[in-house]
Length: 108
Image: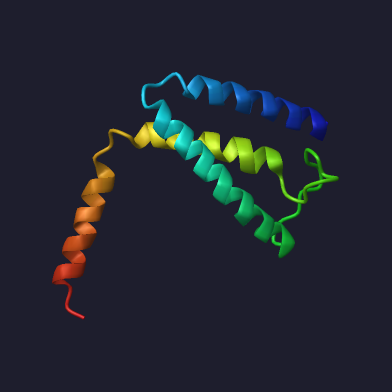
């Protein structure tokens, strides 16, 4: 049953990745995908080696101790969709401005 779930997540992840590349800033999306995959690979190895998380069933478990499916496909695809959802948002700049004002006028 777990293998069926992993294969379905693989197919869904690949489909969502190609569907997300239909939006205009393709260069930004590929950069986000590659950087997220790069950093999550190293952080995932650290987490698994320190025994903070254990994957009982994963793809290529003979070669990798971490989850290749999650770290290199599913998490970067979720980051792409988060980037697309917040691309036109005005809240990140609003909160950064409020933090600057707070830091400048706060009495320490």
